Length: 137
Image (cartoon, rainbow, N blue to C red):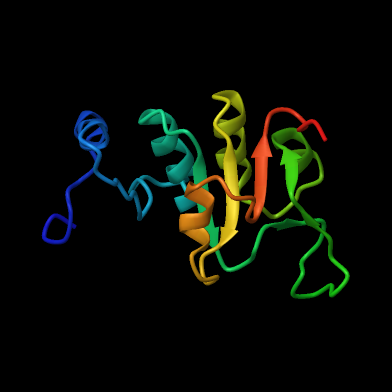
């Protein structure tokens, strides 16, 4: 949507970051078979982001659907392989595999919670962190 924002150009996005600007990537890739989740993973990897944050309608990843199961347990941390093996509804499998294969940490947070995105960026433990390895306790 050139009348609203710039189209994604990797080098331009990186240059904005180098100048201390905030780059927000939205809307997917415009390619068939790529969801907005897989597009977000792809772009985060391309710009060598520190983390890919999925801001969504739930406050993290659960062992079952919290809308259907009031006893669903939220994970503070899990591995890509656990999310894939258990078919947890965190993101589509392509997005998870892209992040896993490139060792791109992912965080799933509630976009509706006040200041959640700011808190996540500041390193506070909000939502669910998804990484390659189990975290030490």
